[in-house]
Structures are given as structure tokens and as C-alpha cells.
Amino acid sequence: MTRIVGKPAAPSPPAASPPTLSALGLFTVLLGASLPLIDFFIVNVALPTISADLHASAAVLELVVAGYGVAYAVLLVLGGRLGDMFGRRRLFLAGMAAFGLTSLACGLAPSAWALVAARVAQGAAAALMMPQVLATIHSSTSGKRHARAISLFGATAGLSMVAGQILGGVLVAADIAGTDWRAIFLVNVPVAVAGLILTVRTVPETRSANPAPVDGPGTVLLAVSLLTLLAPLTEGRAAGWPLWTWVSLTAFPLAAAAFYLVERRADRAGRTPLVPPSLFELPGMRRALPMVLPFATGFGGFMFVVAVAMQEGLHYGPVKAGLALTPLAAAFFAASLAGPRLVSRYGSRVVTTGGVMQGVGLVLLALTVGRDWSGLSTLDLAPALALAGFGQGLQLPLLMRFVLTGVPAERAGVGSGVMVTTQQTSLALGVATLGTLFLSLTPGHGMRDALVVVLMVQVAGVVLTTLMSLRLPRTLA
Image (tube, rainbow, N blue to C red; front, side):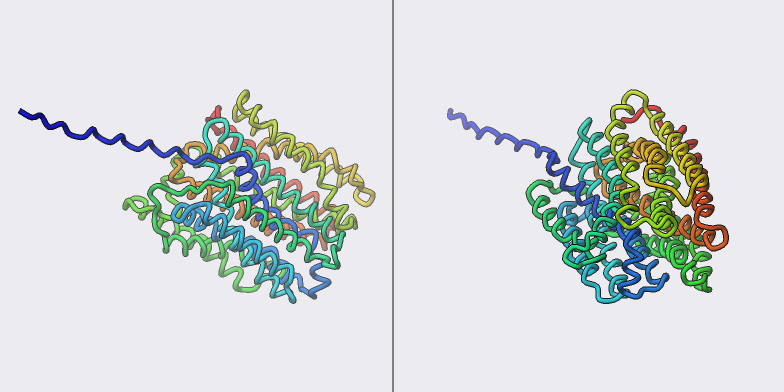
């Protein structure tokens, strides 16, 4: 009797290894993360020159800043969702290319309104690129490499905000090939080209295993909510607070409530909304994300107000106004490097300590300004700026790590988009609210007293952030 022996079963293919982000790949995505933040702040020291060259009114200059910030904030979460669907590297490449082209359009703008339109398009390009950075890091690193990458992202974010104003002052003063203020935008073009080449060579493709379709109603309602809040706050003072600003502000809570109800209904029905309310059940999101709001609001307002005060009050040139912030930038960088080691030993109390140091630095800065306004030198400002910068450097990178702790890889794009949207919206809020307060007080009280008042308002925000930090988990995963 013949025995029939079947073929042995074919060995199952080995499981695909998860994508790994190399050191050069991390540098590349951090380069992409720095561009949108630099360009949010780089115009602060160039606004007087832009006004003189393009004959732009105060209201149009506000739009040069606000148009970018509003477009950026409104589209960030959508950018994260698209990365989850179509691939984060693909969206990062598209955003980088669009950012380079829109920067070129800004640099070649023949009129103030053309510059506003190009800035809005530049903000939209940034919203495609930025969410892919954290999502890529979150899904292609783990353990200590993930913690270090998130810390470096936080350091990059903080330094980019300060470096934007330093770089802006240097480029405007350098007047490279007669480009004057246009160089602050044209410099992005070769950087974007280099970023595209590096991305193709070094950044792995990642996407959500179960990508959800775009949430149309949620996207529209989020856009309406942010526009009804940010547009009147940024344009109201320069436009004289016309009726539309009050109508818009009245509509904001209604739009925000409608957005929440629509998202909650979709979440409970098993669909994937643009911003799932269930995401905020994660401890990191619930406790750390609210802290980003007062922190970034104060930071954004501080950078804008200091730029105006140094140039128009102390009559610093663009270079001097930018370089005056070097102690803050250097201290922030040093604290960012020390943060991961400190948090592994002392936990969330590092964030609390950073809040105390920032508050003391701002109080010292207010005392310095109040004591001798007319004769203030950059050396007089350096100790207070360095102390505030060190405190900020202990806070921001670690806050970002706390926010993303526990976010699953398949929701990396959504989680990153929510965090960066909160940060960007808060930066714009800071420019609008603290900037408006400062410019409103200046005519009646003088620039020195107006600056002191704004600094003390910011100190109140720092106190709030510091108290909130006591609710953070004691240790960081």
C-alpha cells in the first residue's frame, strides 16, 4: 500500500518590523517642525520695514501675522488625519514642498494684500507638514529613543519661536542682495529643498492601521470655532472693533458647543470624529494638555510684546532686538537638554520647578524695566531673560511628553494634531490678547508701564500653569 505524503507547509513570512526613525531622519522631521514656528515669529521684527516698503496699514500688518496663524491653527487637526490616511511621509513631503513655494510667493509679493494671501497659503502648507512630525516620532520610536525624540521636539519648538525673531532681525539688517525684509521668507526655499531631499532618503513611511475617513462636519465646525475666536481678537483693535467682531465673538461659544456635541455623538456611535472626546480620557491629555493653553498664550504674547517694546520703546534696531533674546534661547536650550535626565529622577516636579523659575524671571524682568526704562541695555535684560528661558525650557518639552503619554500609535496623527493645534491657537491668542492689551495701554500709560502690566498678567498665567502641574502624574512613562 502506497503512502501519500503531502508537501510540508510553507513557513509563514516573518512579521514586518516596525519602521524605525534614524538619527538623520529625526533631524529631518525636526527641521520641518522648526520652519512653521520660525515663520510665525520671524515677521515680528520685520513689520516696520514691511509697512514702509508696501505702504501697509496697521490692520493689514495684523493680517500678515494673523492670516498665517489662523490658517495654520484651523487646518492642523485635518492635516494629522490626512497623514493617518495617506501616509505621514507623503503628507510631510507635500507640506514641505508647498511651504517652500508659498514662502517664495511671500518673498516676491508685490503688494501688502498679495503678502497676506501668500501668508494664508503658507499657514495651510505648515498645517499639512507639522502634524506629521510628532506622529512619525510617535509611531517609529520607542522607549528611551522615543522620550529623547519628544524632548528634542519640545526643545526645537521653543528654540524656533525665539530663533525666529533673532533670525528675522539679522536677515532684515543684512539686506542680502537688496532683498530687505523679503529675505525672511526667501531663506525658506533652499531649506525646503534640502528638507525634501533628506525626507526621501531618511524618513520612513507610517500610517494608521485603520485610517478613518475625514470628518466633514467636525472639520467645518472646528474651523468656524477657531475663526470666530481668532479673527476678531487679532483684527479687532486695528479695525476699531466694528460690529462683526462682536458678532463673531458671540458666535464662538455656540460654534464650540456645536463642535463638541457633533464629535461626542460620532464618538459614541462608533465612528472616528476629527477630535475624539474619548481621547481626553487619557491621563496625559486630560491633565497636561490644559497646561499648554496658558503656557503658549503667555509665550506668544511675550515674544510679540517684547519685539515691539524693544524696537519702538527702546529704539533697538532689528539685529539688537533679536540678539537681546539670545540669553533666553541659550537657557531654554540648556534646560531642554537637562530635562530628560532630571525628569527621570524627580518626575513631574521638574515642570513645577520650571514654572517657579519662569515666574521669578518675569517678575525680575518687570522690576528691571520699571527701574530704568530709558537706559536699558541688553546686558541689563540678560539675567531675567535667562532665568525665564531656563524655566520655560524645563516646562515645554516635558509637557509635550506628558500630553502624548498613552496615546496609541494608531491615533498618533490625531493626538499630535490636537496638541499642536492647542499650542498654535494659544500662541495666536497670546499675540491677540496680550498684544492688544499692550498696544491699548501704551498711548495713555507709556510703553514702560504697559510692558510691566503685560508681564504681570503673564506671571498670573505662569502661576496657574504651576498650580496645574501639581496634578500631573508623579512619574513619566
